[in-house]
Length: 463
Image (tube, rainbow, N blue to C red):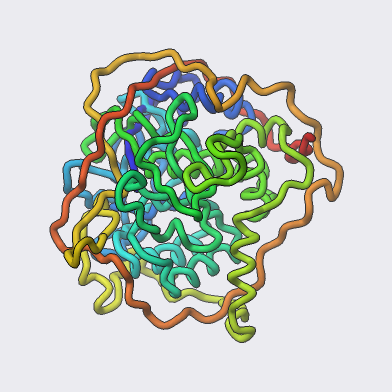
């Protein structure tokens, strides 16, 4: 369910405040990142947990960006070494650079270059459960899961999601990459309360392989992208929902940095309200509520009192839980003194590369389907990017909201004790490799970065 590529430019350890994004980074133009969003925020003060194959912290693009994390898959480190050894050669690193690259030697910039990355190695259902709890306990405000497995959301994973939601975390996951094939329901994207993201190109046209499922909430840039991998090289023209999830997580980091008093519920409400409907009228199973347009959150271009369908579904699930299960959890066993705590006995029996994202039962045989990366072999070409369906340049900034402009959205009811371990469907066999996806048309663009502005209250919604 993922895709991966990144490019950045700046002095090591700095946030590239005067750099230009690379021509391959067309999403900077589609989302007005350096021309609009960075006037408000660059992600300072926000930690984004990347639950993936680990993050190669010593590449110049991520100098000073990566915190000590944990390894719940192999138990061999603190997440600051990328353990992806397949062709993609660093899926987790690519995701991290999309979010928070400082520029380094390649010039590749992340969408939130002043955010911090918390790397957590997770490549199986049980590791997701531990990793989500760990990230919440470490103070992450956004959790990115550019991975997926086929099957319903396991009960203990859903409980971990609830644990994080109660701690004011926004969880983002790629919807999946086999929408033109088996089109399985994928977790963690299908867990209640998770923001599930599909992939679209620079014109706002949905990627043919993006998952077609009712749990899809949004679409975001994820076609013909680029990223910096574990070896420090720039990979270009990759497509998938891993990329769209990472860019969405980065944009949410900007929102959380600019408006630190907004709860996770209010952040998600505004993210969904910013979307432009595409495809079939109303919510559909490919683009969800439409194309995510983060500039509308900063410019005050939102409808009044918008609904919050992501949390409405979550609250419906929560209401079905026993009353005794809603007592708050005050501690998580994943938050112990050793960030690199190994999985408990049995959890690491399925140790498989991060790029293997979905195990699908077909004709009685277990086969592995890639939901992480789709690589595209294209020549390097700089292309102009029209605004397309992402909309015209935003209008003037909105004014600060009066008290109570938005419905108050505090954290949901407290969580209960964790459920007993579940049998995770779709566990892939050892040694599986990625299935690369077919080419997508190249995209491009460029533009200068304005300075970041001081924190302010969020602008009022507009009708």
